Image 1 (cartoon, helix red, strand yellow):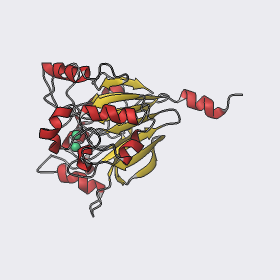
Image 2 (cartoon, helix red, strand yellow):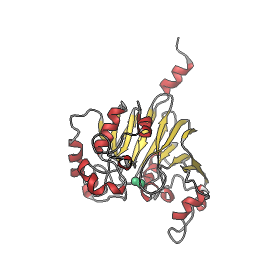
Image 3 (cartoon, protein in one colour):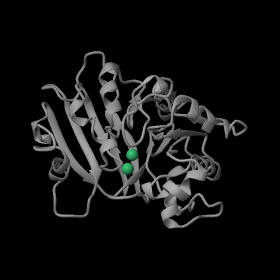
Image 4 (cartoon, protein in one colour):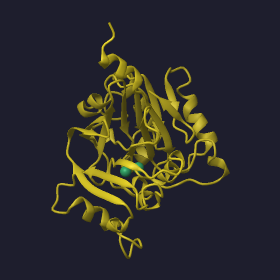
Length: 292
Ligand SMILES: [Zn+2]
Ligand SMILES: [Zn+2]
């Protein structure tokens, strides 16, 4: 006998559109066409929904989300991993959300200070830094903060855990529906906790807990191993760490993400070639769509 739960589980799948895959700053130009130049943004949809309802980060890639919605207004939640520019700068340019009939709930890591989430965002998004403040976006926008733990957002269970990065509180997220799990750790600096067993940083408890058994791990691959010594202070991980974390966490697929902005298509091909014999390592590109 097939239970209703099984039918529901089979029917509910998740689509993940990679809308922006760069770190730090957009990377336009012909050398960046295959992997793409927009900064971090993922769009998640339940398969029974026409449009994405959960966005992870609001880098410039969020501008591409409007095209997925076929003229409809966004009705959903944007979860930010942290507040660095490359994860936030697309927010006021999200035309699917900045319209009178939209509903946009923005969730940020709790900053453990006295400011409201809206006031925190307005520090970077208000005159003289930007023409408007968050409350001037059109439609019904709300702003909330999140602490570590699990909460339900847009029919996804979203688990947040703090992970080391540089400058500001940063969360990694584990997003699950009844069927599948995606782990999102776009900016992660495990070397802050020590060199770990292979010099690429500690495989610490929270990283392993977020990654464990996930279908997909989307992870910071800003650096490669030999760059850690000179550039590790920027607050990022090496691609080698991401692949090894996925192996230790028994992850189905490791997606290398948050590419360095000056890493051209050819240079990224060379990074990927390092893992040619490792199954289930995938580079994030702006054309990548995963069905989980
Ligand atoms: Zn970043
Ligand atoms: Zn960052």
